[in-house]
Image (cartoon, rainbow, N blue to C red):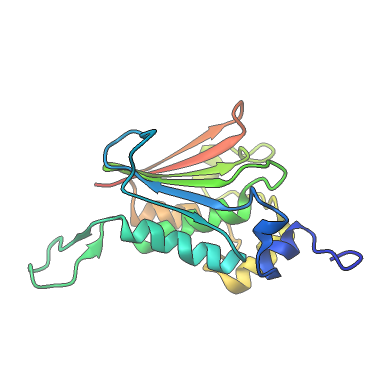
Length: 191
């Protein structure tokens, strides 16, 4: 905070409605009935705004309600498990919120398709990081103030282990670093 005005990290962490001053810093979610983005048809849609902790919870809830519950090796009377493990979704949603480029005036976008979930985050991987580097546990904290508070409020530690943990729980994930388009995409396949 400077002169009584929140900086971006302060607004995202502590303001009641940060989207009023930072309208692009929301998560736009949509669930589509097939494998492509439809221009006029969706199964579910929500724009999620608010303080960081609530945005995380609401984004996880959106994705969860649009996934199937499967019995897997259990009996038909058992409670189904989400087809994509919760820990995988938590790790990738947290990464999109904490490590996005807040100098890019664009929302995080979450798309649920019949065969995959895509989490699209503004800003490509910082500095010399590559997809292979992050799969091996290398990290670079783009937003250190946000990351330090996120470690206290979200399932986030800042150790560089999140991508590895997500892949261990659900290995059917692709990561795409679009340097020309200035975005990063996690594609989680529904297997």
